[in-house]
Length: 531
Image 1 (spheres, helix red, strand yellow):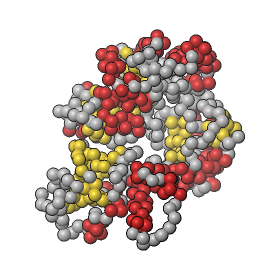
Image 2 (image 1 turned 180 degrees about the vertical axis):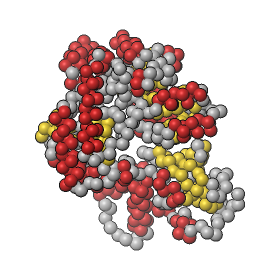
Image 3 (image 1 turned 120 degrees about the vertical axis):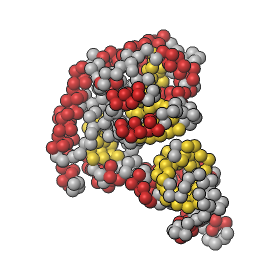
Image 4 (image 1 turned 60 degrees about the horizontal axis):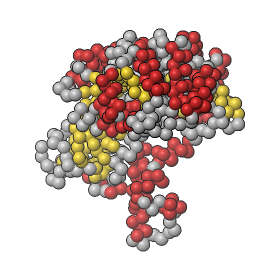
């Protein structure tokens, strides 16, 4: 490989690569082609980037990059186009622009905003301009806090008003929002158990008996007989040998994955996996290899490529945005073939899928065969907390190595009392699941009749595809004005072409509730001229 800048390198790119305005200390390059690197980014823009310490690759070679920011793990594909005598190199991203994440443009705009502020400060220092410090600058005298005042993606989302709505009541189809009764399709309370009289009574009785909180971690004074009772009950329910409890479902991911996979191991990850799974994989410091969503051929290729390495396949059971679910039967076959452990986050599947509510694993008839099954008590159970089930020896290992279990307060006893009651209702909840699935089939049929695409959803999470960010927000606002709440999902959270309304169903929704939603969606579609 020659250390020379090719003659055909765009002049504008060469000029930009020495221009400070595209540099951000919050952006680091962590991997090239799944190999950890120690390369700093010199300059960056929408179509390319320049890095120090060029990888030992030929010019023209396609590279797979992982860039880490303070809030995102960004995966990019580019082509090496030049290397100079100082071992700096340029990578062109424009050829693979369709693979660039949806939030990339917004992130670059944020860098430019920060750079603009830097230029302004330099001009102040040199006396070129004189002005009073702006309010934000008076508050922000510490460089590390600049992102709080300049991040354009954050400010953009704040200005939309779709998140952090303040409810007077919650968790049921009819809520109080803005002083009005509102029909809600935002809660993952799939079976309506958070308002079950039996569950509430069990929790109240436990508070009277054991108090409001336990105030201790599991390794000190935080393991009670009721904790062990729930572990035995949930492991039997999931047809596994043992279980470990966590205060939150996400803490199970953060605690288990880094305890199992380390710096010399490879995690083969579905690209649509939940953010807590992605963050857990980053915490593990493992080599992260993503495969295309639910593409078993691509998974097979990745497993074959790294067949000589220790590997862990990680995926959601039910995917929380599109509502489709993992092809667990195929994943299991590939795991057996390549002798690879499997970790499934079935937060949205347990309680909903399977004859007894055992989730995706029971749905596919793979009880006891998946190495790790994690789920939450905050969805179908209607309470809070999380768990992982596995073989007894594995759970015993995790008790002493899973940091988010060891260094957190135990799941509260009153919550466990409620969870145990919810578990019985789920076991015997055939009628609840039947009602939920009737609602799912009804809504999908009605939405398809009026011309809305719901992708491959086959769960209580139903995406209503709008494919236009502005129209998505307008339709969400139209529904809100008619006392119906759904979740608007749009750029930069997803690509512009994937903007949607996310509708979440419960067994508590009536057919009348569903028909009201469909009626206003149809009216809104005509008024806003949504194609």
